[in-house]
Image (tube, rainbow, N blue to C red; front, side, top):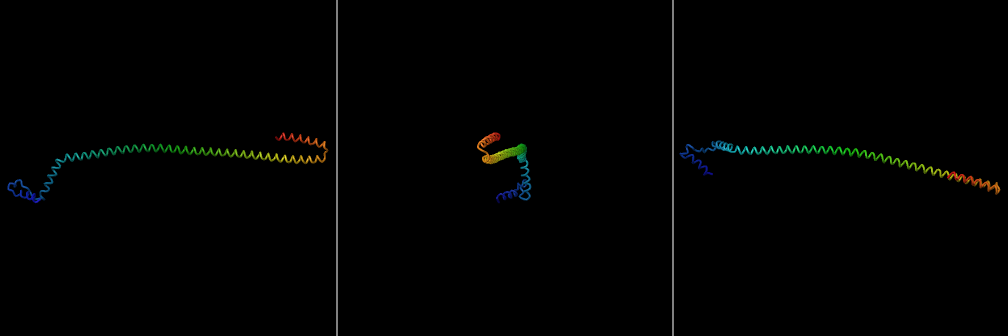
Length: 184
């Protein structure tokens, strides 16, 4: 490094270098060198820098366009999804209403069927009670009739002779036969 610096320093001491001499003062030459380098960079690098910035601008604009297209696509998908959701909600409400009315209809049908079954059972019960009452009445009549008949036969046997006894029995048997035919 010292050799390079010495060569610049030694150039300043050459007699022919007085016209074109080099300033070896680093503080004085630094801003000049920087401005020359910047000028060269700006002059030659302006096109490259403009191209880089234009490319970057185009990529940013293309990304914005793509993002806008994606946003529009997402909005369309969102609208389609909302429309499907509304349709599904309407169908769900219809199913819910239909389900509730079907449940109510089934409930009414079940209540009606139960009422009919209860009514039939009540009728069967009443018929059975009437039948049992009639049977009990018939049995009581038969007992009363048999007791009355036995009492009458006992009275007749003691009071009547054999011929009168047979005629009375025959008449009573005829009456009894006629009564049995009317009760059946």
